[in-house]
Length: 259
Image (tube, rainbow, N blue to C red; front, top):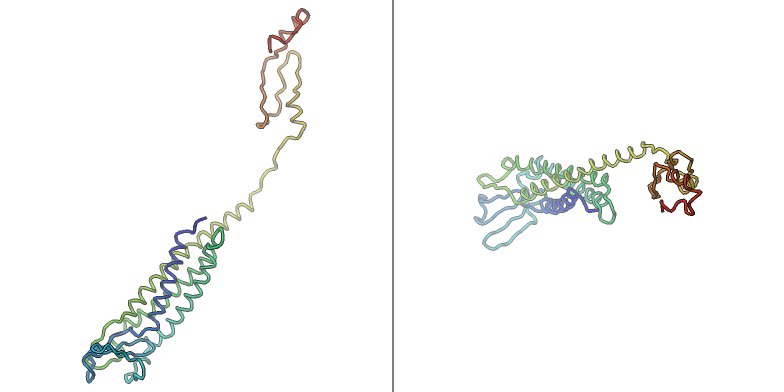
């Protein structure tokens, strides 16, 4: 049996979403701050949910250590929510992929639709968790503390986060279609269990004997034996011996005309 297409879509998009979400969670490119007053003109600061990174365009040098949060960026509610929801999304995605792998047919003849549907539900929930965190941060991006007069831009982590969330949601929906197949299987099993088959009316050896040696009566038709489709025989409604009995006395072979 081939693996259903919705399961293939879910098992492919799920790991892709996990990788992109992991990158978005750990990287510092949630927000880009440039043109910072009293700083070097080529300084671009990458702000994430865990730390900052200063990148100098002229020397291509990046520093991510000992950068103080003087404006209270990390204490803001969208950042705190993202710190909680993004790791939770990663954990739920990993559990969903394990359950999905056990449900999708890899070494079995048929997939386990219930496990595949549960794995899809977990992937769908993980996609919603990351989507909430990304959307909230994006909505509050320009209101979060930043140096006065600096330029704020959306970082690449938000793009990766949106893409990962969409992949997990689509993959989860594709896998949850397995619940429908699971319900169909249960209905078929219940119908097969409730169906009672009538006893078969098979004839024993006595019927075969009646077929092989039918009784013939004078002046009457042959008795119609039990018609077994496995046995082939010929029947004639006329008594073929009726005309022979009149001339039996003068004929040495009473049945030669019939043979």
